[in-house]
Length: 218
Image (cartoon, rainbow, N blue to C red; front, side, top):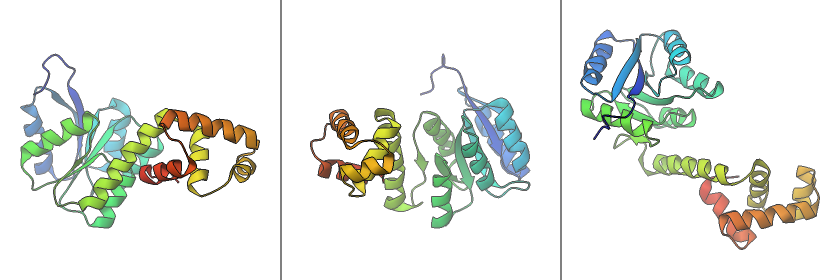
């Protein structure tokens, strides 16, 4: 249930079909915890409104004039804009689906799904989760999403240098080679490894290599 005392989830809507935009606006108008800041009919306007208004969530159609949804996702990623993107589409093939996820989309909703699911998806991605309709992508994409989430958590625990060393260990490099590659001494590599083992609760290079593989670090 929405928290009546919490700030509303702010949303920018983007679709080049007026009927779809009107329908989305009407849908969210009944939700006390969601506030639509802007509705846009092309990619240029959408990106401008995202930059100006800093919404929590952007609901994006992929096929729009003057920058499509893929280009908007690329710009959000490149500019590190603090918005969580939810793609609204009539359909995607596996390659397109993988691309939008790689570009940072936090969810995909099909236009023919029940309207209440769109509302639920907005709340889910705003809360930090991912939303994928059943039948989209399958288990492989779900694993990719989980791996990306795990990687983000790992990046908060390890320093940039420690992550570099984990990648080297995952590649099977020895301490001397790691030191040469990173321009540090072999002794410094050993110190970093000790700290990594302590932080991650691991005891060996083999465990670390397996951990890196599970988390998609490599």
